[in-house]
Length: 101
Image 1 (cartoon, helix red, strand yellow):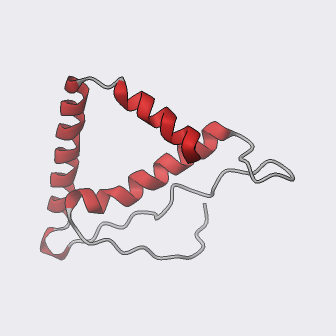
Image 2 (tube, one colour; image 1 turned 90 degrees about the horizontal axis):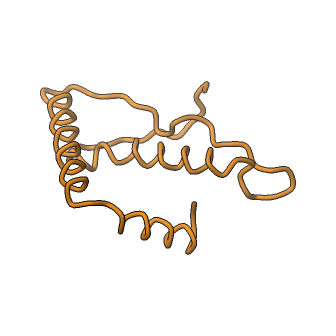
């Protein structure tokens, strides 16, 4: 779900979110941030994968994903993993490299 069409779709989805849902999401984010800060106190380190797994397969001969929903799910997972440290205000180190998925 990228590009202008994806942006428009996300904007329409955001318009459907109620104030109560926004408040609940903010509370969940605050709890997650507090949990991350608690884990990282006293020099503790939380080791998480940089990506949710290998990217989804591409359709043969084209750059588009074979399964658009799988690609959107993978992108969402990657964003969620990278957002944790920023949300909590703690340092994040990402290591590039191959891992066995």
